[in-house]
Length: 354
Image (cartoon, rainbow, N blue to C red; front, side):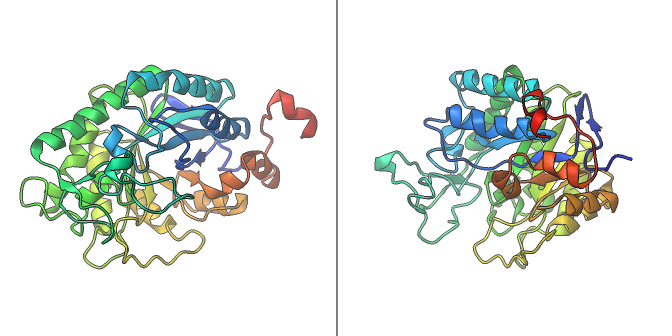
């Protein structure tokens, strides 16, 4: 009997051959938002390695939405050509290509992380970040500009235009990034959102922009195509966004036609206290799944085949998002199948090594 990890799952019109998802991971390797051969090999290797779904790094919907000056982008048509090549390769090798659409908000304009942890000055190609409120993430960061209503309309339009390009490129899954302290998460959390208009204050007001972005995406993304939303289920800070609000949000998103909640945590506040350990975020995916019935993805220090299988067997999540383990081993799915005594198809070019 095949393991759950290697059992197919159908989400809308897409069938994933297994439950292993390559979680979005910044590669800091783009110039002016363009994908290149690094992205082709990085993402393509995970398709050769057998993952069911491969999701790009947070792909900026606007230049000012980049986390760093070297982030991947999808804010202009010229970005499409290389992404088409990458998506075609992923699909030719039996995996499904997905894209995470993001806007960094106040956590933007940073340098290449292995060269400098600081924001890039405006004189050297950086920019003034935007946010729900003029509050820095770090005291040394640039003071972000609080978005006015015109700026909010631009954010929604940028997500919509990016989604249209994603469809034209051939991506089969779109994920809206509303986690890790980036713009949409900044609106969700009362720690970063001190607005007094219709986008701040109450729970209903704080989730408003995310719901409007989802609606903008759905204007161009076919209803039969899977739509994911990644959230941070808790800020890990007293008085911040919390697990109960995440369940309420997930129920609303389910009603709006979102198919999967990709369940992470943290990233919004420097004072966060995260009890990092294997499976430390799985409980949040489980809670959302059991209380709302929506399909969930679990992520966070999931590194082994049996560990992943147990999460699925215990019905704590439906998909396993893996990041660092798949950086260490692009062929983890091939090795995991052997450990679980599953027979899966290897690339014909590699079968002699099976």
